[in-house]
Length: 177
Length: 221
Image (tube, rainbow over the protein chains, first blue to last red):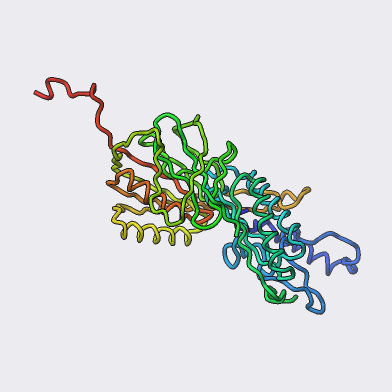
């Protein structure tokens, strides 16, 4: 959702960690006993990718920056005014965004190298993204027209596609982990 | 590539016919679909003198507080991109005198202060070049909405997650405008409203006192 920043709630942790540390050296083999002493509060797994042994997993810039970097090093994929103070039509817009993303990634088979960016200005929906140049230009033009036409009938407003293409997939990869 | 020959012009006819403008976009695909589900946003709607017209920089619906029931019909007309005049008057309405506004207040809201600052720079430069008197620029205090939610889907009540949504405000006040100036200027700045920024326009009109309202005889004499 646009406009959210992620803050971690500082729970009362010291008690739990003290007990955890105490137990570990007092009772030999405590680790093997399956005592659940992990602190849950420090775990966060949203938007994070596991490191591979041979550093083979490619990450785009967007994937490399975790959710707490939104508004610092990252911006949003959906730009609209629904979550502003006294914003309107928030749930419908969210559902429309989900539909648009599914539609775009499905129509352009394995061609999207970036996320689908959705920008709403006045009554227009502008869809942006980076496409891999694996199909011919004529096919791309057809798909652009097809998407614009069908989505505009679905959403009942003008839809414009602003796609950029890239010849090499490596161009969008930021790092390997 | 995919160009439309004509532009859909939405004309609102209701009580007090005013001059409407269609939210055309320079470039391709200039049609506007006008269905009850999505009213095209018309920046030049004249509501009652002190009512605010909420204009969204997004695909939100037009919200005018003063006119709840309106007839909507579309007529197609051909427009060109170099068309400079943007105010289109309905054929049935006679030529009206320009309305006078003592004040036109434009309030912008957004999630990012940098975007609002850049938009303010654009608007003040445009106003300076077009000789539109900009009296005041204010930055009211931001509004933060916070939620504290459970982190886990089941139990673990002590572990929460906090989110917040910040709305920043920008208020610009233009004074001593006529309706045609206001319409044209607002149309221009609204076309360039960035995505994710909402705008609310409040117009304060100067009207002549009605005939039956007169100062009493003692005061006059």
